[in-house]
Length: 214
Image (tube, rainbow, N blue to C red; front, side, top):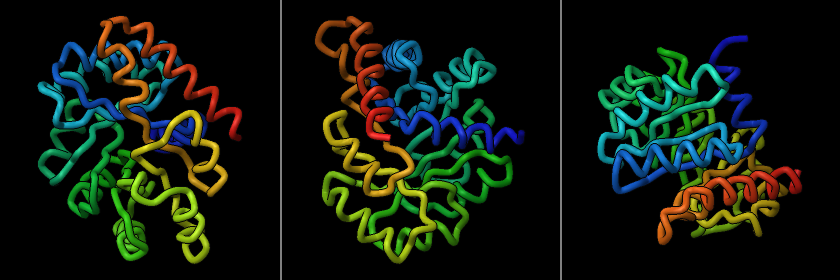
């Protein structure tokens, strides 16, 4: 199977892309490894993380052969997209429609997750070639919004980011979302204690909620 299809299958099967925004390279690596131990298989390292490309490089070398999808987030231009791919990223995520990112990603067959909010932005993302549309910020609307958008645009693979929890993830999936973007619920679980076992536990809990919802 083509590598890109294998990576898209990872997202479809687990239903979660973990978004890691950390204050240091060390924290990002610790969170990522703890989350992977908890079953997370698709991770987005945002470019706001200090040494983000180094984090991506370390994780991709260690986990890519183990069926773990390592991606880069907050990609705002084609130059950063190419740098992320060279570091080992096989998924690129943007907070808004960025045709240059999608063009570079498609050239090298990386999965693209393009940020959008309105029907117009979603259609433009699809026309630009995005694989998944990231509904952002999702907490501003809700699952009913996805239902409304999906009526005229059933072909859009929508994944909300922002405000998704184990308690409400079933509402998003029932609305037709292909998966969800998850951040602080998992990544900040060890913030106060430094116990990354809490990150592993939070990852397991979220994955169980997704599995139950399906």
